[in-house]
Structures are given as structure tokens and as C-alpha cells.
Image 1 (cartoon, one colour):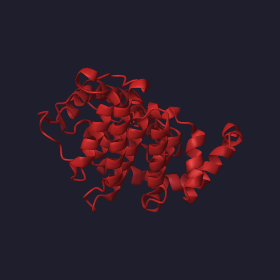
Image 2 (image 1 turned 90 degrees about the vertical axis):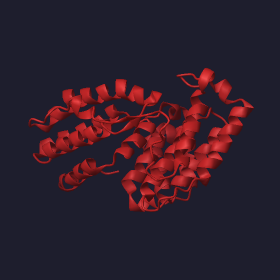
Image 3 (image 1 turned 180 degrees about the vertical axis):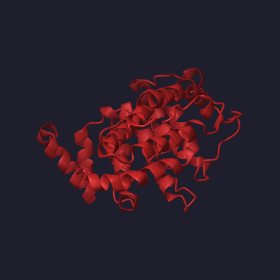
Length: 296
């Protein structure tokens, strides 16, 4: 992919800043579930700030927009569950530290720090209260929770580092994973006015299940379905950057369990998918990396 020219960059930068300001908080939760680290996102914003500052335009507006983005994200209402408590105790301090000590200083002008008080305005709901999913369908949330239990166990079987490969190869585990794969494939979403959210939520379910599976035929099957879902999806032409983000996440994952999937296996599936963009991406990856080219 070619780098944007300075003119293109300056034209798109205020659009990106506006999208940050107007992003919905539930998209932040999807990002957290997808294991997108605030540090890695900070790195992206910092790269944009450095270029904007070197061009003498847009850096302050981007920094302020990112500040609003974080305040909305970190101050969203949440439940009283274990994951939310971890979010409050670990994630929020880390996010504030990176923005206040690193990112805001790259604007080249004074940008106010985000205080703890600004992001402490959220409401903590009782554990038994279900937060409405953005697409209005709790089925997707239920599948996500079941995948989490499949990966980590529950109750007395819960393991913070996840179940072992041996445990995940047991017949009962494999059958449950197969059932969840069918659930993901059958889940259509029910809010046609939010089709983009349906896409992100469904591909995230595929990715999470894929990362939970041990190496073997089941993981191969989930990977194939993941690629089939991406190939030719309408998001590819309607929102190519958002679509490509998930494509790139598969080959260059932040989600640690996906890193054990051989890149050659992914590229072979892309080449065979019939999708011209995935096919071209696979070809370019092989051309750029002799090891991948020679592995064919």
C-alpha cells in the first residue's frame, strides 16, 4: 500500500479527527474485546501527530479529538463484573499515563491532560443488569461469553492463562467449539441500520474463537470460515480501511494466540478465496518476504 501524499494526508486528517470525536462508546468496548491495546492505538495517533506537526497543520485538532475520544471511551457506563473491574484498575491508569505523558506533548501546543475525575463519571450497573448490545441482539454477547468460558474455563475450572492445549483437544471441548462456530455462522444481526457494527461484531467472534482453538483441523476450519466471511464482503468496497484492518489483524495479529498460525496457511487461503484484493495482498506479502515466497 502506498503512503499518502502530504496533500492527501492533510485532507483526510480533519475527517479522522471528526470521526474520533463522534465515535460511539460501544465501539470502544468492541475494540477492548478484540484485544486492541491502548498502547498500540496511541502509537498510531502519535505517528499521525508527528506527521501533522511536521507539516504545520492539524496536530492540535487531532490531539484534542483524541482526548475527547478517550474521555468518552474511559467514562462509558459498565457493569460490576470482573472484567470491568480489571478495566478500571489497570486499563484506565495505563491509558491516562500514555496520553498525558507522551501523546499530548506531540501536538506542539499545550493540550490539557485528562484527569481521573473526567473519566470517573460513569455509572457502575449491578452485575445482573445486561447492557444492551449496539445491534439490539444479545445473542452475539452470549456467544462472546461462551467463547470466553471455552477458552478460560469457568468456576473451579477457570484458568487466567487459559486452558491447556491438551484440555482444548478433548472431545467435549471440540464439540462445544464446533457448536459455537455454527452459532457464529447463523448469527445475522437484527439491526439493518447498523450493518457496520454487525460486521465488526461477527468478525470479532470468528477471530476470538479462532484464537481459542489449538492447532489442528478445528482451527483450520475456523480459519477457513473467517477468510470466507471476509472475502467479497460488502465492507470491502463500502469501508475498505475498516475491512482491511481485520485482514491485516489476521496476518499481523496483536491477539497473541493468533501468532501461532502459519502465515503461509493464511496466504494460501487468501489466494484461493477468489477475492482479488486478498489474492493481491497474498502475492505482495510473498514478494516482500523471501521466506514466505520460498515456502510455497
